Image (cartoon, rainbow, N blue to C red; front, side, top):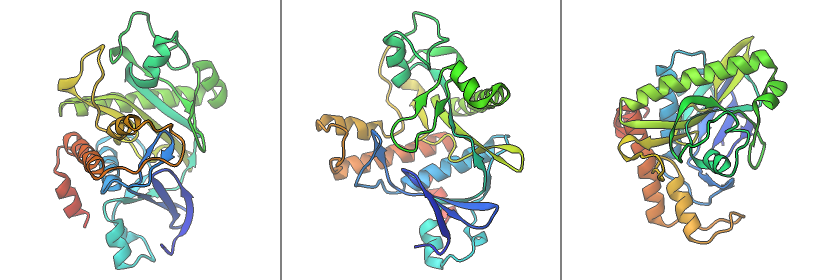
Length: 293
């Protein structure tokens, strides 16, 4: 138990107050599926997510909340706690969160494909007819959703989002989200990876609009190996789809309690997260573990 004040929990993260201006974000190894947190953690998953966020915060030239991953700057931590938190924690600026998920889609897949196939809806309202599953969109689309405290987020039409946010903020979030997506897509493509879609969060700190929370991780994004992508077909991804597929094979009805994960599924999931880090960052995950202690 940390001596710092605990101010929030998510499906993966724990958030602690350092002082009036800074928070400590800690990414656990918890994994969720169908909005249910599973009983079995995935070893090093939190470090992969943090490592990917650090990679992108360093690479992207955009205002963000990341301050440092150096835990020596955090007071009231024991040496044992610093060791446990190494690689999975970062100090960030405190921000007033804008309660909207800023989703950008460059390819038609997942829930948006199902919506499009079934006649259209909020995330596909501006798309032309005749597209295939997994097809690259003519231009990336901005499909914001309200942030839900629990359960599923609710997709918004453009008109609803403009009413919810105000026109000026909507345009700023749309422009910034698509710009970040395009730059990240170009970087990932150079490493043989497609960034199919992702979601961002933003917040205000002293009047400045900042990119916050995790960014472009395997939990917040859909990454595909470029050499296995083909429109009209299911594409394997570097995320927890492997876990979802196994859970579906058991006949689980997506209500608690979830099934326990077999050792081979845990190991296979860890391997996919680690591969995501290595392919996207271009660095060995073991090196990340070494430099973070």
